[in-house]
Image (tube, rainbow, N blue to C red):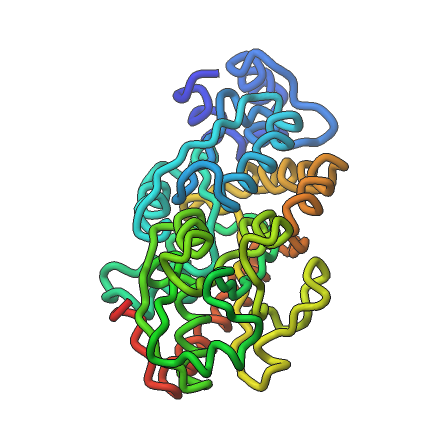
Length: 339
């Protein structure tokens, strides 16, 4: 169906059922059927590719999650679901680009919670992404951060790190990220001094700590685990509220006595103003994708904890996290803008 035909269909929906003639005209215009009491526009969506934009480089955790979801959605929707990478500004460029597109269901974005909950603490109000500009469809998963030390550093635990205060270079995955907040809050509470080295994402930060260009770095577990298993880096602690099931022998910052529970959450969103029937169809497709055995295996293989909640629950949760993180930075006089 062409775009004008879709608009004609939506305009005429109010008249369906009023007269048989109106219904016949609508069906003729669509060249299809409306059966089982279903909504006409919803049953015809989509008629072409549904694109998921990712604000990070290909190969990272966010990109891999998007591609896993896209594969399942494509099968359910019966159309291709390409993933496009638009890296920059912790995902702000991609998110603002998608938010400015027509709210027709054909443009989606894979959101990192840090963009909404942490990045606003590091940038101006004009640069911050507002969740109110988006239609959040579904929460997906939780990815915990882990503090890693290079083998050459000789650090085996947090006490070693504290003893080296003042001579530490530590890597983060960028300004305004969960990696930066977690380390800044830990260092402030534990009175550790060091020089921050921000990278564009987890991959270069991990490479830097493996090569001892920085002595420690905080990276998402899904990216770090292969290097941990290979013995190339030493996990000092996790920033999850409870011990991560994939690192059962590694203590949390909370266990060590520091109030630094910071995890990465992800969700799928669309431009604000999405028609309810289209939104329902997209949520149905996402639900089908994450319910598949293939996606469950993907989560396990990539050390992701399912956090599959509604769009409304995501909005509430992320709003509360933003307030908590702001209070944390104010309490310990942390400026994320300084990198």
